[in-house]
Amino acid sequence: MIIIIINNNKRADGRDFNELRPLKIEAGVLERADGSAYLELGGNKVLVAVYGPREFYIRRMQRPDRAIIRCRYNMAPFSVEDRKRPGPDRRSVEISKITSEALKPAVFLEKFPRSTIDVFIEILQAEGGTRCAGITAASVALADAGLPMKDLIVSCAAGKANGQVVLDLSEIEDKEGEADLPVAIMPRTGEITLLQMDGHLTPEEFEKALDLAIEGCNKINQKQKEAIKKRYGE
Ligand code: CDP
Image (cartoon, rainbow, N blue to C red):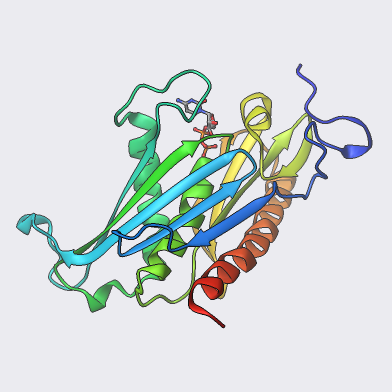
């Protein structure tokens, strides 16, 4: 077994079990996009561009009563240690789908019938937890696009490594650990908009990991709000 948790409950990167990696969020970083955001979480670097709402050119896929959110999660070939083959794969198709579903409940889509809102998530550097980082950044980019929203969506994972339930898994904890539990919430209502689980947790561990992930989400939400305030003034 690779040792991920070292003495005194400290993790390999020096964090406590309930500690996030260093986080930085900036809103409005691209000029051509309607909304954009840049996020760093530990070694993850994520850029998001939002276009729309604009009329959906594929007529048969238009919704007469609301807009749809289309997400494209993409990993740059240079974002991981082994060059990633460019283009969509099963994993990126799955992450694009769950991201769009996680974001949907926050936006007043009924205000934009027959429209599409396009969200492009580019992972420039990956270090575990990119789906959560992508959702958190995408939500800031949607707000930056001026879309009417009920709240931001924020995402964070918890999991289990070397028998310990820990917050915000690093790449090694994700790969070598026993479980990964990515969660997204709408903080104001506490509604869970994403819940996935990879690996095994007992019911008690699951409860503990879920609570920890929600706690992490609430911390990250403060940074999202700060990023938007910084862009648009208090
Ligand atoms: O990124 P996330 O944890 O949401 O998704 P994952 O499928 O659990 O991937 C975990 C990590 O494995 C990613 O964040 C990357 O750091 C790494 N990975 C990689 O090295 N090469 C890939 N083709 C895909 C993922």
